[in-house]
Image (tube, rainbow, N blue to C red; front, side):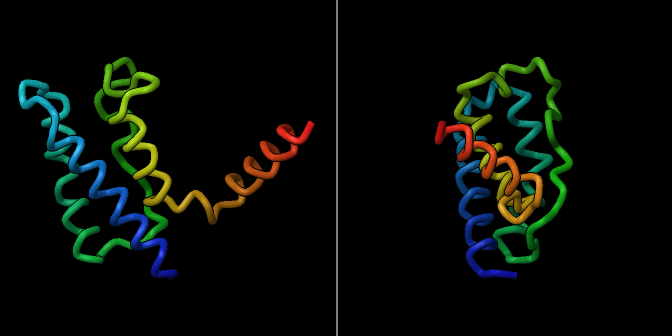
Length: 107
């Protein structure tokens, strides 16, 4: 396991956790997601989680929740966190997508 992958996971977890924790506590959906993720965040911070790990809370709030709206800072932070947790950069499908995207942009 490369140390930079664990560092990236810790960084993205901190950002995502801070955004969730900084939300209006009247938003019970965000409260619930933070409660579910807190043990995972704690384990990541302690260095007990190494990528790749499956993210079990994908769209946990329901696919129509405003949390997942395009352009939402929470959705962006979650996507960055998932990418680091699941270590997308080392996955074949991700590498193929990047290669294809670069090829399409060259035209």
